[in-house]
Length: 427
Image (cartoon, rainbow, N blue to C red):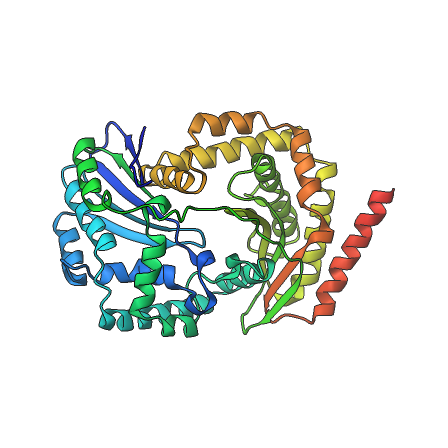
């Protein structure tokens, strides 16, 4: 792998993958909802849409036709931390495909009529997410635990903020965030490196560094109970604890801890809450990571009459996790975590995505051998320490969406679990 940094701060990396007849070009920009003002919430995601509506050279239909003419596929997505654009094509077409992608990003038309049309598309996307119970629960949880931080901003924005956006808002945002020092370009697969360098420089070398570098800031974590009444058939619940950010010394011990707790069919939560008690279809534990911080989530969906037992049993399992972890569970978790990370990175597009993400957010690459070795060196004591440190029931953020009960119902369950934890600790 090769990394080049232009004088203006733009980072470009190349990953040759022998045996492939295709290539992928990705562009990562540190522009996400966490950097937005409330009145312009959703603008990063809107830009992801609007660049596909046309450039100075091509309108939306011509972009689509040009990509189809060469058999290329192009897409993009927005997160709270960044926006990612990518195109994939056969090796002898990747130069043309990349040229179209760079043209979209560097010369967007930002036509007023297109902006108004796309507002309707995004408002429908917002409505679609509001009809998805899982999306509503996750967004409600993040709004609560990250209250007071940019991470509480919704990726899609609100109906009010999206409807109010104007052309000058897009121009100003792109001038501020679509800059060399906040951009990484990656190319993987089969390609001509020198031709790609020439193409990229033609579009980006003339840009000036604005000193608007990506700065990591601490992320607050708010505890408490957040309830949202919605007419869903099931109650959707997240039990959240403060976690770690993109990279932290506790990352792999904590991930292994969560694999044992609630990732996959052999996890403790799945065995007890689903298989033994039959209270849920699925229950999962995962770590959501952002620059500067993150959170641990235990997520489940279930009928209202099953809530009390499921929450009580879940809290009981979390409470006892650090005291009775076994070496066998740890070894199983190591195999599962290592396999999931490495196998996903062996997919060409996933590999590129992972490399670009870490370069953008951490200014470094994390290779497979480093991941394998780091996980291998985690001890049972490390995992127990992570469980004790992060899975503290006194630091719980509880979110429920659906036909929820009153605040006192959930508070009573949590307080009872805390009392049991205190009693156990004193024993």
